[in-house]
Amino acid sequence: MPDAGHLPQLPHVRLDGPESGTPLILGPSVGTSLTVWEPQLAALARVHRVLRWDLPGHGGTPAGLMPLDGTATVADLAALVLRAADAQGWERFSYAGVSIGGAVGLHLATHFPERVTALAVVCSSARFGDPATWRERAALVRAQGTEAMVSSRPGTWFAPAFASTPLGHALIEDLRATDPAGYAACCDALAAYDLRGALPTVAAPTLVVAGRDDPATPPAHAREIADAIPGSSLLEIAGAAHLAGVEKPETVTAALLAHFAPPPAHTDASRHAAGMRVRRAVLGPAHVDRAIGRTTPFTARFQDFITRYAWGEIWTDETLDRRIRSCVTLTALVAHGHEAELALHVRAALTNGLSRQEIGAVLLQTAVYCGVPAANSAFTVAQDVFDDLDRADYQIEPDDQVDLDDLDDQVYD
Image (cartoon, rainbow, N blue to C red):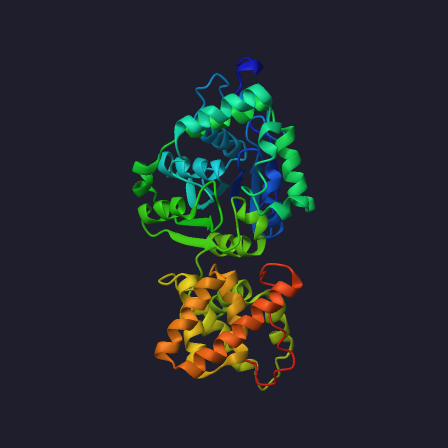
């Protein structure tokens, strides 16, 4: 019998969701704990058996579970994940990771492809910049502790104002509580990490998510991953920095739910279910619930048709991503003068990752191809939507949709 002191050690993990759920592992970013996945947990745990894990020296995982002498690698972290999966009896699992957690996912998908059924890489990279920068950060934290990193995280992780929210505060406190040796070892691992050449070998269905305002792993890093992995999807989120899942939780959650959903069977029921998921993700649960609540026997068949066909077949088709579909939809609505639905889809376009400037560029192009009067009305509608958002002093979330309760003719969406 092996000495207990030499048994493979496991990272600290937390399990949520039904035991019969499909296995899904969630990896954190440097300086955070498994708390970083709290905004997505409830939704993902409805159908998945979710395992969240802490990096060495972070949360509940001892720093000594990876080398502390400057030789740590992302492969060491991937080995911890495989041990945790093995402890659950999981031969195969889906995986999503933020930053270094995403790097672990890419390592698993390239070195252990038989284990990974689907992959999501959130605000991550195939190479995190100059290795010397990470060596310098490791030396700084070893000398001064993680407090040396606290002042720079607002503005990097999320917008500075978000740091004063309960979740923002909790994440900053996670950083303060992180063992400097473990944090520095993770920096060593990032310094040695470069998977750019291996990306084309990733076979698992892959979703790549980027924060448009991420200074740590800018969207160009995500595009490099998505361009290299065959068949991958890319989602860029406007108004999000490095912890996009924290700052824009609804958008990231919706994307993950859609990506990790089992392939739909080609039946009317499955198309309706898939369409309802996308409809809620794009238009927001509140609006969809209102539309369903107004359904009458006279409109019921039309509502079913729209959910199955427009949302369950067209919007779920992966040939075009949601950003492109929003551009097409805005143009069509301008061309036909559907101003009520245009307001709804301006907000949906923000949810789908378009910036206000990009929406303006789409509307400007409609002036050429749909006519100046139509574009003039469209700009007025869009400006009213932006003004409403600014007055409320929050960024677009899917629940905050235009209230169409008083529009008797609004049955389409």
